[in-house]
Image 1: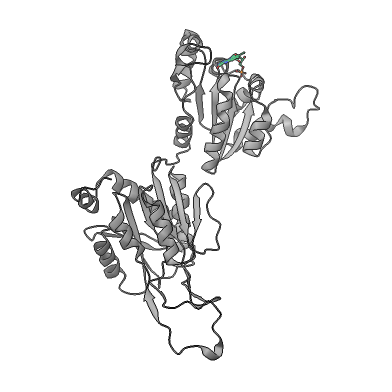
Image 2: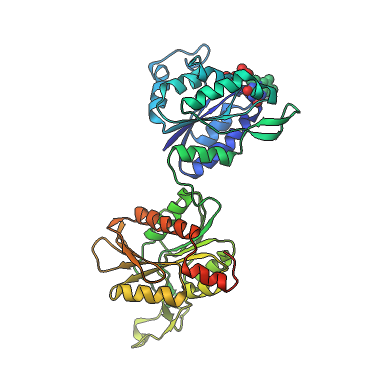
Length: 414
Ligand SMILES: Cc1cc2nc3c(=O)[nH]c(=O)nc-3n(C[C@H](O)[C@H](O)[C@H](O)COP(=O)(O)O)c2cc1C
């Protein structure tokens, strides 16, 4: 999605740099537009470097520039390309111009030319804010459907104290996510996701592993990030690109995955354990490659650590979701896992179904809830499945589930 950030000429113009970063973390493509006055406060170079796009500053290509067709229709092209426009800071002057339909520079022309929702974050001196002209302009703008992010109170750059400070960047971002209809219901949560297979070495070159691609876990990480969560992704070897903006920790064996998960557990509020962790490993690991002539007839295996069971035992109120990938007796195994490990939710999938399980771009999952209720979802893209799983997580965060009440009864905090 594309968002244009209009920066007008106020002291708070520098805070728009932080807004660019916050929007980019949500993978929004940001185009910055600056008024002439704004350039007295911050250079376009700052925003160009941050956004990765040339900053638009002039309607006619700037003083002395040869007008060309490209710049002549740029305001229309931008107006049509964006999904939202935010002006932060919005000066008293910009508010007045927009309220009266003026279009004497690129930013105000863009406001008239776009059909995208517009968010205004005013910032100014207290007297300018309280002036009835400004208040009447704001009233007009509210009535016309502009989304106003009210300024905060506090010490202003002019030395006075009162309303007029630019709202917090997170509040402005939330208003943008809102108008873009992006969910932000995991803001403030830290989601720990495990993904991919593990590799259990046999000798210097060989290992035991499984066919997990990591796609489901990576989709959960991406979907959690998109809903405002801080995400820690602990991944076994996977050949897919990790989502931007998540903390990635790569591991090899089940033992390494366990260490990484326990390390991050206390800082997490939601744990989604989608990795296909090896259940067993070779009892002995040879430091040299085993030669064909010396190979044993059988391979001794020992169980690996049960990370999910251990997380369930160690957790201090985190919401815990397990995954069950099976080739037979799916529901029986999923319900047994949920009960035995005291989980809040099990996501079960039948590896034998076409379009489900390892390697596939899609998945067919059944959500199994405490008490045994199950809901089978239709075949869908793994990212959509991740979003549905998170819908349940958010719902459970609000409504204590039986598993949560049990942990409360044990005196643990959630
Ligand atoms: C140092 C300084 C700080 C200013 N800060 C603000 C401000 O925070 N809010 C505001 O509405 N105007 C502020 N102004 C006045 C605007 O820069 C002025 O009204 C300008 O015409 C706005 O142009 P623009 O709305 O096209 O960006 C400030 C002016 C100066 C010299």
